[in-house]
Image (cartoon, rainbow, N blue to C red; front, side, top):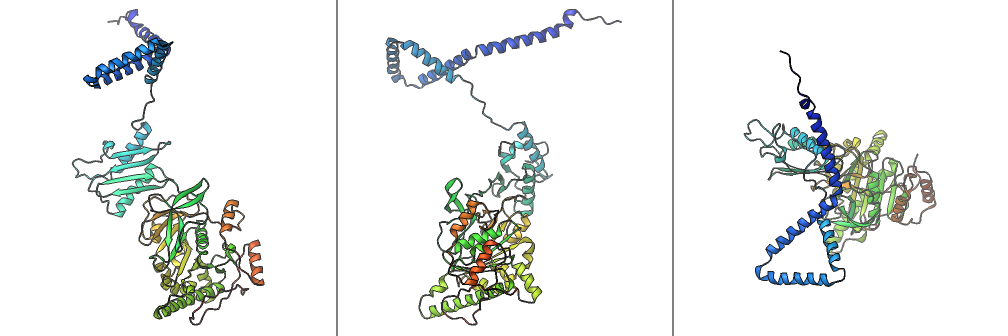
Length: 547
């Protein structure tokens, strides 16, 4: 049987209906644009009427009569005023237009991209936060992520900046390996290149992940407000320490949270070990420590690298010597060991006699040793003792003798550090990019944040004794004789340098050479004391070294 064609009115009806709907929609949009002010005013009048009705309903009955009388009096005054009704009408319309305006829509939930990111993160956590035996799992494939993620925040690029996760009680959050797997997953899924802080609440089965802002690098070397025996190692997060110091930054004066290292007889961390990659800022940190120690003590610097990074300190008041060669370094460290013994004997004799300790034994002595592995290699090749062996006495008895030892070394040479250095340097600092296991090997504990692969010079972590691991940014203290140093930083360091002491002709010639060409400093040969005797410690004048 042949199929009969549909009537014309039915075959073309859908097209006519669609065309009619388009015409009606266009007319409605045009009318809305034309009548938009009237619609806004009407919406505002409706809101004002609703507010007046609510106010009248909330007014007690005994106060409604006086209220009506007051309103009638106001209406009468406005009616009798010149242009009063017109001004009242204009004011009413303006108020209604303001109340009836369309406010911007407030975002109350994640958009599509953020929702997809949250769902993907939820699915990635399912294998770690679920077990087959759980009858009502909080994490399950295709489950509801809103029950696990109680709080979340995104930045302008759509990446997570804060996330609060509720995990099941049977998760082994007390095991470092299990926690590390979760932190590594969150770090990878939330975006690399940023530093995340993970705060585990084992009692409440909650994990809060937040993105830490970068520490400021605008603080340069300056006189910090500290007392003798306190050294500012750098600056950290505001909620990590309880003390701030006023500093001068690029934006002006501000109070910055500082990591303060206390030395002296009552210090529990009398010596410091700094480990970092080449160019990470270890030498800059030692230079900053030297500038802070010079106003209150004497400094002996032994530079194993021989690059002349401490040439600006040569010949300054309080700087006993700046050694770069093997002979001078061994002689200076041997003198430091004898000086430590002399101070201990002098202090002991004074206490036995009932007298205060001599003044020269109370003046702090700082021994800064940079790259001892290089000197150790040269000493082994020459058949001479390792310079680190001469540090045993200052490290063991330095706290009682007001002697502080600071050792800086690179990661690739940490295995050459002596047992005395490893045992007695309870204050530790790691600078530059490093893996979590490298940081834990030096500090004794892993940081609570995720280290980033690219960090500026002077950025790292610090741990004083058994305290928490803190983020650290060392104040910029570059070599003022380096051509790459900016003029502002050069002047900041030069202003902190002490005056030059009266020098011999040989020392003047040596200093002039160092200031023109950065070369290793000549080797002074201080004569070590054979036996301890009271009196101030001698200051050795550098002389020309062999070779």
